[in-house]
Length: 242
View (cartoon, rainbow, N blue to C red):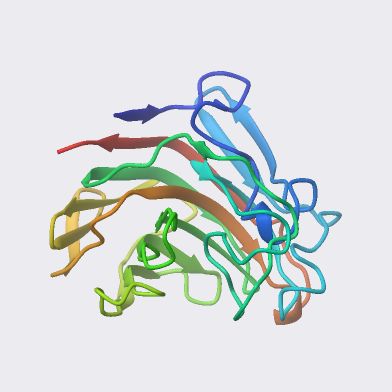
């Protein structure tokens, strides 16, 4: 059970780590810019924030994100979640951390995002990849500033041979800069995605292994000149088991 309301002025480190895939970079180089307290988690990417995985990621990318699990193999190994290139090697070993790794249930985020044509915000559930095939991803929401009413959601197969890709965008008459609830009802063999309590997409398959929660805002410096500081404000994250 998870009912995260960000009341404390410190991130609950029994549930979250404030890094984005640090094994492919480092904890220092992947640290989020964030504030927490008063019922809000505020993730942002100020102008001075450095690139993530500079020299490793093919295109320039900046990220502020938190995730609810973390682990890797030793430096030089290929053991680590969400690799983005073939044969990718761990640059900084991560100890095992399993803060919140649900298997099935109802999971929801309440959030708003300030994004520009070169940024995006996302909430997704990624297979923990303790085995490489346990890599399927349930994308609850992702939205780009270039199309702020096209909400991406669905299932990414990645390296899971038991799944088929089923991801797309749903165009909705909402303003993502205002608070909305994005959720998924995850059952054996099915996923139902909702926005503000209304089911807007169904998928007739699902991962059958634990996932970690990931919340992040992204900036793509090669997509245009800088605008407003990208920001994601989260007011609640809940997870209810079956």
